[in-house]
Length: 306
Ligand SMILES: NC(=O)c1ccc[n+]([C@@H]2O[C@H](COP(=O)([O-])OP(=O)(O)OC[C@H]3O[C@@H](n4cnc5c(N)ncnc54)[C@H](OP(=O)(O)O)[C@@H]3O)[C@@H](O)[C@H]2O)c1
Image 1 (cartoon, rainbow, N blue to C red):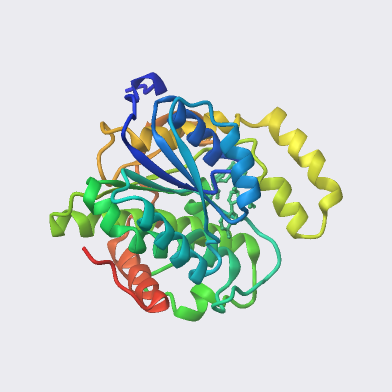
Image 2 (spheres, helix red, strand yellow):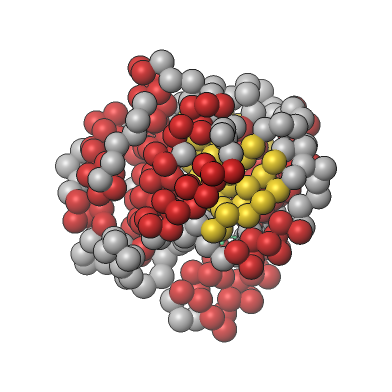
């Protein structure tokens, strides 16, 4: 059935944490939720950019900024602690921030940068915010991608393949990170279901949308002179960032069940209204999801307290 954002209820009294909310799809989702009266927390690595974005939120909802660099687990822990000091519950955590491509770089904890940012940092944040999510009967939304279709994580993936992949192929790693987002949502859904937890988990993908993601990839690869061209071209050719945020908003709608996967279905899933989709084969194998979960807990040195 066709879904429209007007179906999403007013969100007064509800608190949303959105990672990477200073830009692109995260900012558009924040704007929409703010217009519905929500309290939106922009979880960002650059507080200056976060404050700038916060001033662009329409209201009447309230908002705040928390510093949180997903590529640094100490920063994730610090951001989660700051959130817990201010809030006793979180209605939804939108794991939206992401990087695509770029050179091989290791994070402070020695993990490959894309996997650390897109998957591990978000998993750590979910674990750290669990009491707040539990208190609200909240929802975790993982922003994946059509790139997840090409992910190569398997039930035999090793620690090295996940966080120290060699030889380094940036696009392959990006696909694996987005597969990891999808697998993580599915496994979280299974685990909360069997534990009788009130927390739900949904994955979304934004089609292909005109955000800064592609220009940033060029900059990260040392081709910053091409970035303005990429920004302009993507804005003309691709669907808007606001359209890219629609699957996230549908994922937050109470009519969307835990375990669902939301995204556009048209033009090879590149664009269109958010629909309930079949989970890609790369994201639906419980054995692969369980392996990713095991590695994730091992790398983070902590377990989900369901
Ligand atoms: N655009 C698309 O077509 C498309 C397609 C499929 C999936 N996606 C996914 O959609 C999500 C949002 O991307 P977007 O398209 O909106 O791109 P974007 O405009 O580049 O936004 C990415 C956001 O992630 C933040 N970020 C990057 N590294 C971070 C870190 N270490 N800690 C905290 N925040 C960090 C960025 O913050 P800074 O501004 O500080 O860098 C920015 O706010 C990503 O997960 C992406 O994989 C996008």
